[in-house]
Image (tube, rainbow, N blue to C red; front, side):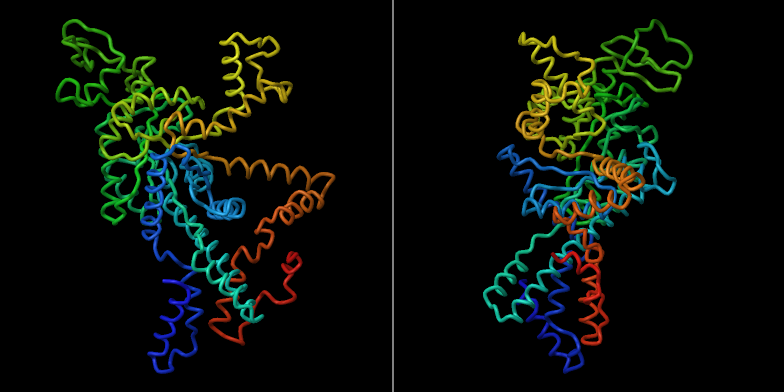
Length: 530
């Protein structure tokens, strides 16, 4: 329903109450409804799931249609990101938000900063999803509020053409609400615990859940050592739990992103159940590092039958079993195929470096079985991008016989190499990495997990250095406020951003001429009108 139709419908309803509702305005109702398109988190989840499915289909048709996101740890950060995207690019299409379990653990736990080991309160994840969408919906309300003011001004000036243009903008307003890919870690427990948490996350608005194949109580950050995977049947049960949660809540387009940490995980806590040769359990156990035994083995041994031989899997003092070295890529491929064949929509392969051909090599093998397989990929801050890509260029040049004697491969991070031909080529490869990987390696969605964690630290360091140093107040004015004004950062009018003008509108709706509004001539925010 458009703005005019909504206003007319509300007006008719008011008239039906024989004057008792005459104190409220049909147009004000239409404005409030326009500013609140989404009534519940499930409305958001259904809406964003449809967007993401359409984007996945567009990518299948043309890999140039890949999507991107940045990880956000607070609703305000997510809001400012989406406002910035609309300002610079005119649309939020193809831009999502990633909700990182790492950042929830590090920044949102009541225990204080925690490592990424699923020790934080699992309820803090759906709480952050709800918070992010609250801020995005407020961004809609704020932007539409500005359009309503422009509409009133056009009417007051008698400019009907301008008024129609603004009304068209209101009717076709693009929301700041975009898909969130939300990290559910390893499910925070068994399949039932995964299901219960998935429901909370979906009810908060998440249309996409990202779950990993690590053991819940041994979970580690994907870029740290000591990762322990689970047999496929255990992981598939959690995939099903997520799907049931989506279906129960009526989000039938919900997306499940399955992450394999097998490339860097050399351990398992369990030997898989196998019912017949070649099944998933047998394949999983086939990667175990074993030694042949004679007779019945030793007391306490766990033995498996491999190719008619009795084998003893190597068990560590931690009671964990280890895989054969060098099997990581094969296990990743197996994990991905099993996930896609059991309900997953997107894959996530956690790698130790951003190397397109390494990723593509695995994706090529996966696509031999599942042709439309595609990935969400972590463009992680845990990688030293500068060093990795300079070394990749060094190796490529050396391979084709190009002279690299001017460079020390081990020290390529040095500022001394900035501006050299090698560093320029590396930077260009970083610049085109997402585009190239989308085309070559099947990556539908590129995300950075922790960018706003790092930008907050960097900007705060720069401000503290200036403000508490010789620059004093100029350190803030020059590098923050003046930059905000000149770059058109909406947040420079922080009262407006916090909802003051929205509150003024409501005061006027509720109290009419008696409203005591904050946005009068003495409001210092007027100093930023220019």
